Image (cartoon, rainbow, N blue to C red):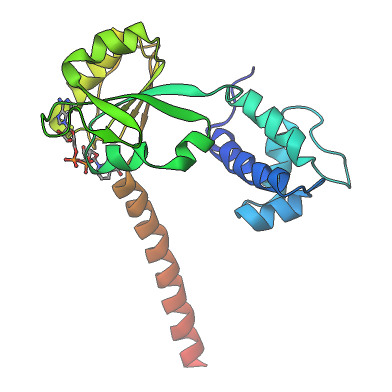
Length: 220
Ligand code: NAI
């Protein structure tokens, strides 16, 4: 598989989710224009993204949602469910454990760890929270490939190290801190504050443009 542009990889899950919705509701064909209206990505971008994988749709007719789901799952390595280990069962960790969409997307948290004796042993979202002391051995025994860090920033690096020691290959880090991992380990940072800062930039620009336009109209 050739290296895909980052933007395309970010959009594929959007196409997948929407195609799954069409497929579930029995839709046979969908055009890039309809898909565009439902997910807010331009039809040109959709066509360009999907054309990278060969003949996906039929020109002038559109895409078959079921086929789209199958193909995108194959591109994203989502043909089978990924088992995940989660460390830190606080606000974010509990929300992830009880969120059904996570599982519908092909991800199943099969191990959850915390260090707080008040939390260890609790059943959250059908899973018993284990002591973090057992983390490395359990994830290694169960051959877990992906880990999620949801602990405070000061503890994130040691959890990342334990994940690597336990054999995971991909880490999703919610803690707002840089963690170092060896090459060969995929690390993705989730940061809502950074996203909000991006939003602030674009919103500020829009407001400034509107202000200029309003002033201009006021002068007429
Ligand atoms: P929380 O304080 O509710 O939960 C943290 C949990 O981690 C607690 O249950 C605690 O016992 C556990 N913990 C702490 N050290 C541990 C260790 N060494 N091993 C195992 N468990 C440990 O925190 P919350 O609100 O769930 O946030 C989690 C992380 O996500 C924090 O780093 C926070 O800054 C970050 N965060 C990230 C956001 C984002 O956009 N990515 C948004 C909000 C918070």
